[in-house]
Amino acid sequence: MSKNKSTNINTLAIHGPNKQSYPNGSLSPPIYQTSSFVFENVAQGADRFSGAEDGFIYGRLDNPTVRELEQRMASLEQTESAAAFASGMGAISATLLTLLKAGDEVVSTSALYGCSYSLLQHHLPMFGIKVKLVDEVAESALEMAVSENTKVMYIETPLNPGLEVLDLSRLIDFCQQRKIITVVDNTFMSPVLQNPAVLGADLVVHSATKFLNGHGDVIAGIACGREEMIAEIKSTMRKDLGAIISPHDAWLLMRGLKTLPLRVARHVENAEKVAAWLEQHPGIKSVAYPGLASHPGHALIGSQMSAGGAVIAFELQGGFEQAVAMMNQVHLCRLAVSLGDVETLIQHPASMTHSTYAPDELQAAGISSSLIRLAVGLEGVEDIIADLQQAIDKAMRKVNISAA
Ligand SMILES: Cc1ncc(COP(=O)(O)O)c(C=O)c1O
Image 1 (cartoon, rainbow, N blue to C red):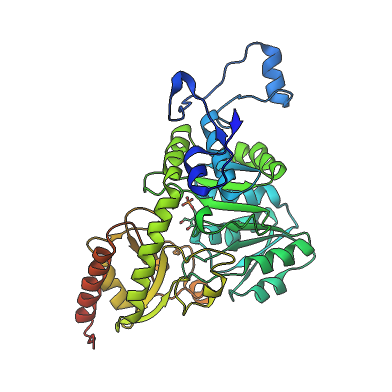
Image 2: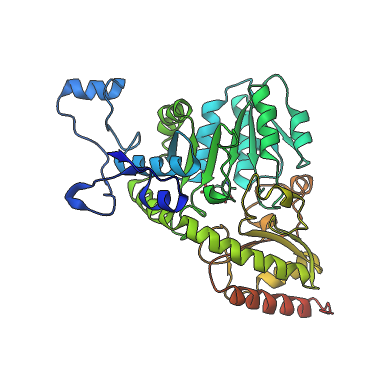
């Protein structure tokens, strides 16, 4: 197997880092749909288990289709290695449980993807891990929360659902000086727009369910990082929690990756137009999208990230009641959670993706009950805007607020 020389992301997404040669001249990678791998003799089985010989043993540990996906993801995130999981939460929980033990401390923001919040707030403390979540999404707040027991800083940027942006270089430098491990959730950007490992992050995690797969038909996760850290995650928590991706889903994900750069470019193009349109609409109270010049994180475009992504958070002038009325009126956009799919998806974080937060926790994390999250898809942008327009118009009439 020889290396592909190109570092171009379009080429890597299609061919991967290695020039593959599959059985029977197959162009597409085979799906190794097997639970076990046969040993030639007992000595070989023992060598595989002891690690003296590299090779496959059992599908909960490793699989050739999964391994190829991991090599492809590592090349896209520019890390030495990667581990693939059955979900984004599988990747995040196995990673944090590998890194942390009783007495260690993890620092993060209280605004996070709902299940990441629930893992940190409710479950890690059950293992004696101290969790400090700061309400203010600001580098200084995270830095102030760090103590000598802090082992991990867990960062999402842009944050789900409010799209706040954190300065990765600043936080990574701060953590490196204190030997704190940085774990960055790169789901909202994908490796096409942001590479946290290039900025020095130790581990990059993804809900691969989103942009990486892109077609709304796979639940998957990825952790990318240095060889020894990834090997430890695979041989401990991924194995013992049983969180590896299935070979078939690994194959679907590789298929999705081939068009990732193309899809992300079009997602961004559409999202920029939708965000600009929302921003000038008189019925809109606020729009958060890092690609807009009005967004506080916009200054990091060009250094930390190359564009604002394709998720927009906005509020209508008429508040919660009008937000609900609007979401009930969409036709083309689908009322569904998730993001990074070809379809435009709209959802209500406070009652859906972030329903893991109690009402006072939502308030502390700054997640308002009137916030709407829009994950812009790949449809014709004029159709997306027309659908939003008619839904907003109807909601405004219903709640009796004039568009003027
Ligand atoms: C930012 C972020 N991280 C992690 C996850 C969890 O991923 P999964 O649903 O694939 O477990 C999500 C899911 O929405 C997410 O938005």
